[in-house]
Amino acid sequence: MNYTQNKKISQISPSTLIVGIDIAKDKHVARAQDDRGIEFGKRLFFENRIHGFEKLLDWAKKHQQENDKTHVIFGVEPTGHYWLSLAYFLIAKDYDFVLVNPMHVKKSKELDDNSPTKNDTKDARVIAQLVKDGRYSVPNLLEGIYAELREGVKLRDQLSKQLIIIEGRIQNNIQRYFPEFLDVFKDWKGKAAISTLRLFPFPSDIKAMTSEEVLVKWKQFVKSGVGIKRATRLVEAANKSIGIEIGLRFAKKELHSLLDQFELYQQQLEELDQELEDLVQEIPGAKEMIDIKGVGVTTVATFFAEVGDINKYSHPKQLVNMAGLSLREHSSGKYKGQTRIDKRGRKRLRKSLYLAVRPLVCHKALHEYYTTRPNRPLKKQQSLIALCGKLLRVFFIIGQKQCEFDGSKLLQGLPELEALQAA
Image 1 (spheres, rainbow, N blue to C red):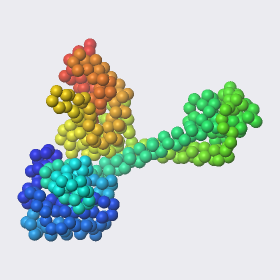
Image 2 (image 1 turned 120 degrees about the vertical axis):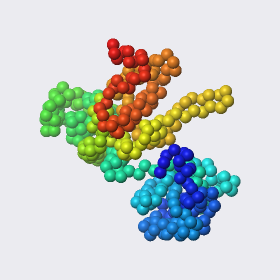
Image 3 (image 1 turned 135 degrees about the horizontal axis):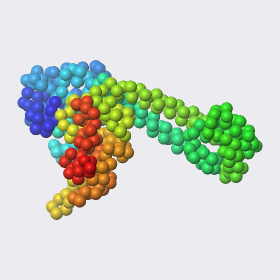
Image 4 (image 1 turned 180 degrees about the vertical axis):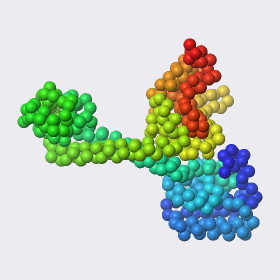
């Protein structure tokens, strides 16, 4: 299926049967029509099971035969994850499958009956009408290594979020029961700090101990980096602590449970990162991307997990749109509003690019140029967003040509920077 608006419309011909499907958790609703919007037959309810999918195909074939249609296109409004099974099923059967924007469905549902009523049957017809007008998109359904990467990156995000939550709860426990702990250990995630939280986490556990006894306990778990001075500071901090002294039994149980979860998530995250690194290296162009100073494996893995096969795209602008980095303007008459990015795209991809661009050494000259140029200088945040688009274009070229990154090419067309680099 073609992506340009004119070609989308041209693919809906008099020989096309358009099937609009409203997706739900257990039962879907389908309605069929032609390229003029004339509806065929009654609605079809079918289950989100294989027999339901086969029922849908039989129903569509029946309408094809009765109305002399040689081409079928199925359009759905993506609802959660419930549409994915149907999408893979229909695509495997070589049917054209497209998506309509849920916001478009919501805004256009009153066009036919001037009523704000919403139900599954009505939505199915609205979806079919949007497909008829070419207001649809072709889903980026990944396969093979790209599908594996998407699931891996999604799992990594989940583990990272859980790790952040656990870290916050551990710090909460420390602040309540032994706030002076952080005066002794600047980082509670160090080996000595974690062994302390395991062995004697609260002031009441330490007050009866001497500095030497604390040091002996530490040496069982930490071979270097701790000495008698730190042990003395810990004992002194415990004796002067203002921490809560009640509920210690289950507070200690909570802390040990949180530390177990923290170590488990850390281990799982390290193992997952290694698997993702091994997997992403198999993709053409990935090694050259990772070799860019400041770009990590996680950034490249996220890029391919969201974009898929780079050879399916004909222009880097498609990637910019996918990431939600396209500019939108709000103006009317003499009023001209601010220009911002539309953010209608893959937020995981957008976030990954932003985090990668900030420390990138190779873009510092560009960043300085964008923020200090005499004509229309950008604010710092605007410059970073522009650099995200640059990085996407770099990935696009490297992914298609498997060439090494050349930072000087980013400066082409900017005389001031070219002269500076030559000097």
